[in-house]
Structures are given as C-alpha cells and as structure tokens.
Length: 425
Image (cartoon, rainbow, N blue to C red; front, side, top):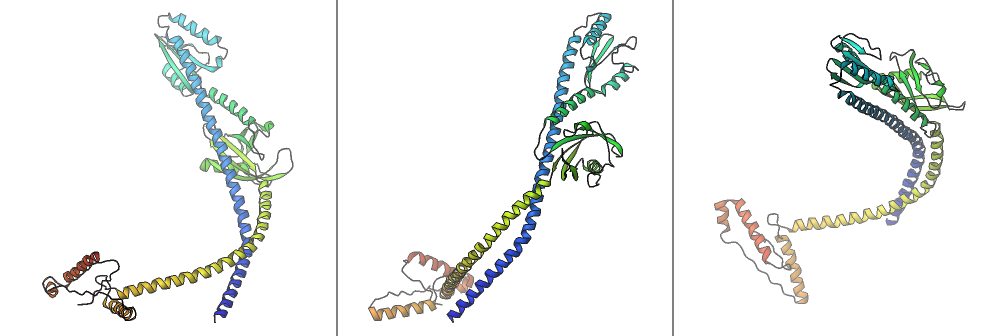
C-alpha cells in the first residue's frame, strides 16, 4: 500500500511539473507581448515626463527673465526719478530744459516713455514719444496700462511721468529666450520650438513660427491648422484644440528627420504660455523604441528557455519538500490536537484543575508502580465545610466562584510535582 502511495505521489509530481512547464511556455509568449507593450508605454511615459519638465523649466526661465528685467528697469526708473526729484527750487523753464536735455541725450531714448505736463496751461511741455494728449489724468491712465514700471514726479505746476514700456521688456526677454533655445542641445533628435498664436480660432495664418533651432530659416513663417504631417494628420489643429481645452497637450505625428528623408514617429508636448500666447513645444522621435524592445525580447526569450528547466527542477524540489513538510505539519497538528483534547478531557470545566477521570487513571498508574517497584504515594483529600449552605444562601454562581478561588489558592501552595484533582461534589 505504501509503495502504491509513493508511485501515485511521483506520478502526481510529474504531471504537476509538466503542467507547470507547458503553462509557463504558453504564458511566456503572452507575457512577452505584454512586456513589450508595457516597455513601450514605460519608455513613452518617461519621455513624456522629460518633455513636460523641459518645457516647464523653460517657462520658469522666461518668468525669471521677465522678473529680472522688470527689477532692473524699476531700479533704473527709481534712480532717474531721484535725479529729478531734488530740483524743487528750480524755475519751471530750467527744469523743463534739464529734463528735455537729459532724455534727448540718452543713447537709448526709445527705452523711456516720458511726458511732462504743465498743469497751469494744461498741456504737455515735453512729449518725445508723441503720446496722444487729452488731459493729464486721461493721459496717465492710458500710458500706465502699457508700462511695466513708472513713477510720477510732482514739481510745482509740472508733472513728470517716466516709465519703461512692457513691450520693451518682453522684446528683450523674447530675444534672450530665442538665443538660449538655439544654444540648447538634446539627445535623440529632441529640440524645443515656439509658435506664437495670433488667432485661437485657427485657420490660415493662425500662428507664426518664433523659434525653431532645427529649421531656423522658417522662423517667422505663417502656420495653418490645415497643415498636415507625413501621414496626412493635421498636427497644428490637434495642438490648438488641446491648448484651448487644457492649456497643454501631448501629440503623436510623423515628421522627417533633420538632414534625412526618413520619416519617423514623433512624440511632442506643447504648453501655452499665456503672457505671450506662445505655444512652447518639444518633441522626440520614437523609432528607437522598437529596436530596444526587440533586443530586450530576444534576451528575455533566451532567459525564459533556461528558466523552464530550472523552474521544473525547482518545483520538483518544492513538491517533495512540501510533501514532507505537510506530513510533518499534519503529524504535529495531530499530536497537538490529541494533547489538547486529552487535556480538555482531563480538566474540570469550572476550576481548570484535573478532574476525577484523570485522577482515577493517575492513581491506577501509581498503584501499579507501587506493586512493581514499591514506590509510595501520598494522597490527601479534603472538602469545604458547609458548602451547601453557601450555595443555598448566596446561590450556585457564588458557590462556583468559591470553588474557583479555593482552587487558585491551593495551586499556589502545592509543588510543581504535585497533582491537584477535583474529585467531585
């Protein structure tokens, strides 16, 4: 019987190993395809994060440049204002002449927006920028809306407004960003480009190309949402829709590589920079992904073949060990359960000490030992006086608590080699 059991066990092991091997081989092919797809998605997600971070970093640079240039011109305006602010005692004509000469002699007069107003005659006495004159309040309100920084100096009947046009700062920042982007270099054919949107409804000339390091000769070119990629997809229309809806968009399209006739799939990320209506984008080609996954899959197939043999051996060992462990656990569980059941059968349910059944068995063993070897055993029996009265007076629950308390007290007094039994009653 035992031999048959072993044969059945061995046959079962072989069947399990064969099933595992076949299952593994079938699963490996499926896993290879899943792994391939997941690898492509993982690499794409990594590239997406890189594109987004790079564009966002450029936007941070633009904001920092705008802030820096504004701070610079704010300091320049404050310094120039302080120059004229200390001329309170000067005659009006002299003051006008000094201010006029100062700004006329500036090497970059176009940098400044200046107008001096005589409140008595209610007219401009110095207006080098040819600002439309209405009245002082209306002129200031009109001019201030276009200035990044400005200050107004009051000198008697004269009011002097000096400031820096926001357009000047934006022009400087755009030129700096243009040069910076052209100096950037990225691997895998990546580059940043910038298109300025002038019509968010789309159509011909909806935007023009501001920066394109790979095709600098196209900078300034008008763009249309009808333009298509190499596969006929309207890439600019898809970009515009995404920017209008979410302010940013990922896009897939096909584009010729620089200095090559090869058309490759490209992943791009674009984000709208609202102060300039710039669509700032960056793209990277994805054709390198297929070669990478093919190489990885070839390596994984070779590894899978080696793993099949190792896996079968491993599961054979595991089954044998598991079989042995199972027998051992079952035997241990059986002995523990048997011991627990015997202990429960030999214990008094109320006090937890040994019961009469166990006491009878133990004294039988001790008597047999006495007859064979002459070993003597001391037996002491006692009861609780007037216990019935306790039950009758206080109830059986109190009587039970009394038995439990007496048992606990006596268990403290006896030795570990003694046996304490509730005989009954």
